[in-house]
Length: 172
Image 1 (tube, rainbow, N blue to C red):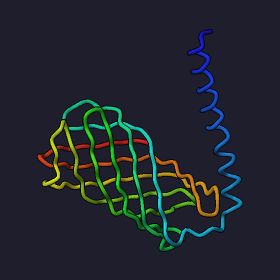
Image 2 (image 1 turned 90 degrees about the vertical axis):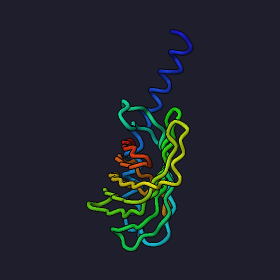
Image 3 (image 1 turned 120 degrees about the vertical axis):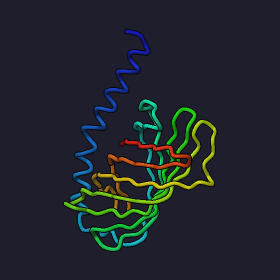
């Protein structure tokens, strides 16, 4: 067995360990902090990966990063401003939403949002012609500490960029 194969197998074991242990830790922490309220100021950030479709091209891989700021108006509703940057090879698409996160059952949530979009596609900048963006996310919130939660989610976003470019992305 080569060193490279050994490193790859250790990474696979590490990720398998994380996938098996995190739900158990999250469940235990969630039950211990079940009464913590979601009311008040909130800041969030995320990173992930997915795919994107731009114009008539094939789907491409992308890196997703986002930033959220807002506040909980009740235990079941959080209102927020959300800004997302999607990076693909040679292209960057930026969009911002106003969104509402609704907790439907326990800690499972849906987050629809609408807002503005701008982006660069093949070195063309579309800052003058602002577009439209809409998105939907679904996820589950694990409260790990009193004021900290881990929330993996699946998302789908649609953006109408300047010059008629349609763009959609999906990711985790």
